[in-house]
Amino acid sequence: MYDVIIVGGGPAGVAAGIYTARKKLKTLLMTEEFGGQSIVSDDIQNWIGDAHISGFDLAKKLEAHLRTYSDDVDIKIPEKAVEVKRIGDGLTAMGFEVKTDKNNVYQARAVILASGARRRKLNIPGEDRLNGKGVVYCSTCDAPLFKDKAVAVVGGGNAGLEAVVDLFPYASKIYLLEFGETLKGDQVSQEEVKKNQKVEILFFAETREILGDKFVAGLKYSHRKTGEEKILDVKGVFVEIGSVPNSEMVKGLVALDKYGQVIIDSKHSTTSEPGIFAAGDVTDDPYKQNNISVGDAVKAALAAYNYLLKNK
Amino acid sequence: MEKTIKIYTTSSCVYCKMAKEFFKTNNVQYEEYDVAVDEKARNEMVEKSHQLGVPVIEINGEIFVGFDKSALLKALNIK
Image (cartoon, rainbow over all chains, first blue to last red; front, side, top):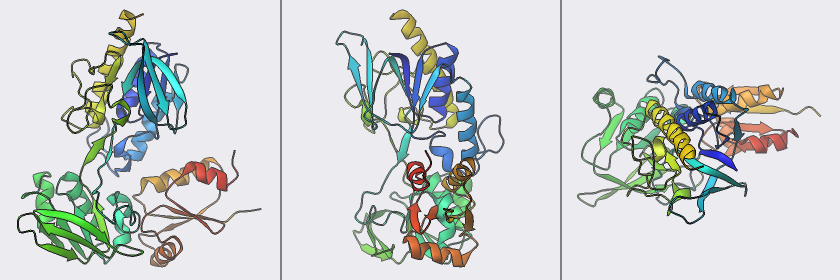
């Protein structure tokens, strides 16, 4: 049995791993990949200590740092937790069992959840079928493939605005669809987007269906106030509507909020279940930031250490 | 037998970088085509893969979409 199992290899998971290793806790860390969601970012400018760093380089640095503690941390990659269960039925669990997508079952006395979040999908017809065929979830990756084409970006938050900016040099026309009545991203990005001639912003827009046979050929949407349906003649649909927490594996075990985020006490990164700690984008912390994830994960690791000392 | 390996990329795509790094680590020779600037390669990639997203990897005529490490290890007979 391990002392701690850490689920996730983003900034939170790695930070937790380094701290539990330094406390000489026998640790297992499982992740699908290192780096977390910002791995696709071309240029991160707010990671403290680096004025510029790509998500790829950040991922490599995080992994390398953790691997310096490989005597104390077993790293399982790629491996994903699918269910966390309690062992014992007392007030405080005897430990926990983590079942994975490789059908392995690992046991530990404490668990730190740092499983992050994943991209939210539109959940409309055509989206899955045309994924990779004009439906895009990584604008930095695939924007250059839409040279001289009309495209739609769904979502008026920061990610949506960034996708629009990624498309400036390539697309011939960019429709920006926002569900509400205003854009939500940073003022600076909003102004950059609004003054570009290629961009047409559509408010109260609810996406209905992505059309096309082999490739995307159009996007059907309706106006939420008038109910009027329209079809945009686009070859690309860039989906930027936020994220959903990866908390399915603890559903029923720890308290989640209405968005599925793990509710934590931010003082010690504790959850409703003693022995389970959580940090980063899987939690209800309001600021989804790499630096915050790291700090909360350090709290989780130190709190787990104290918990294990008390519950020998 | 020497395998012919092509990778279609864009410069800003992180999974392309991972795939290239994977090839380097395993001493696999590959040809890279940047489809952001190379229009001919872009058309070729779309035609072969029916895919509008990078990376697309071709190993002896077989097409791999995205960076799937275990699929590539299998295709390249790397243990």
